[in-house]
Amino acid sequence: MGGLQKYNAVTDQFIRVNEVPPNFIYRIQQDHNGTIWVGTIDNGVYYFNEKTKEHGDLRYDSHNKNSIGSNFILDIFEDNEKNLWFGSEGGGLCKYNPASNIFKRYNSKTGFPSNTVLRILQDDKKKFWITTTRGLVYLDPLTDLIKVYTKANGLLNDQFNYNSGFKDSSGKMYFGSVKGMISFEPNTFSENNFVPPVYITGIQVNNKEPVINEKNSPLKKSIFYTNNISLKYNQSSFSIDFAALSYTAPEMTRYMYKMEGLDKNWTYLSTNRKVYFTNLAPGKYVFKVKAANSSDAWNKQITTFTINIAPPFWQSASAYLLYIVISAVIIYLLVSNYHKRLAEKNKRKIELMEHEKEKEIYQAKIEFFTNVAHEIRTPLT
Image (cartoon, rainbow, N blue to C red; front, side):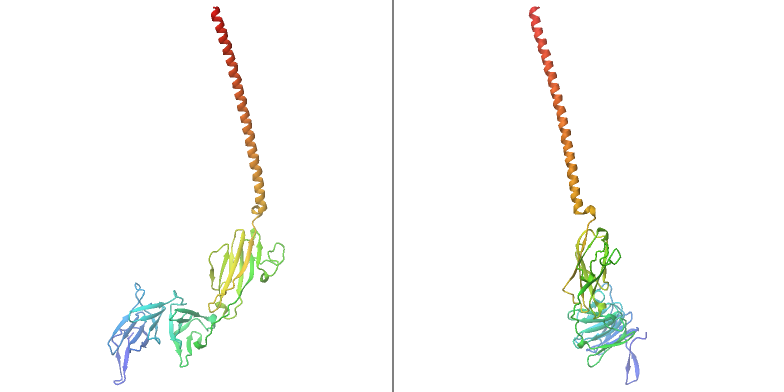
């Protein structure tokens, strides 16, 4: 915690650098202008230039997304384009633009496996190789392309050590991890152009593997030679296994699948090679799956597997036809009964009307004879 000191060979004395307050200093780097950059633990970056007397500090500001990503600085690096890069703990990698005093951050949100950057190196093609606590990162600063290398790619370990990296005169790089040192030549790296085909390797119905040609088994031959399968309504819960035939970093193989008839979008899988479906409705489904190799190249040929789930007998076409016939008979009987009752009702109305009419006629006759008798009786009187 004594701060930064410089040695004077003439006086054989150490002189304290006043531009840098007492701090736990972790990294010191001089840029092309002679400015000294000092990375500290928990206090950001200090810088000073003995010739120009310019000095200052760079701190993390939670309210400013353009500030440095963390005050815990682990590495400082100046690239071939005279840009400054800062590796931090908790803040990832930060590229500094002195003209605008703005930092560009690379962290787990942009594709880094970890927010702790331990060492920064640049190869002869101006590409960066960065060690973290969860793997080795390749970064193209022009396109921001990020690739992550882990134990699946052949590394000894994903955990690298602090400030443990070196590039020799031939361009070969060395990095130290917690389980030893690795070395490689970036110029000899080649892309993995083989995109593995994907095969359906298994299916389980109601958590059981169906036996080929067994009674009530949906499998009539090996799953490797089966493109479609028919299931009963009570077999609508099943799982599907699949695998890509890749032997180059197979742990880096990624998958994505879609069940047409159920899903609208593709679902990505990083390591799992089994998907589950539960209580699917009767109908036709097409399971689609494809894979990407270790270079993130996706297979253009999609593997498909068709699943037909039959409805229960009470939902079958024959059952619906029977329902229609029964419904038609019931409707016919109801309509016939309605018309019969209506006819009887009308018949009764007609009979009542005829009775009323006869009654009216009889009453009219009585009145007529009464009037006639009255008319005859009056003159006689």
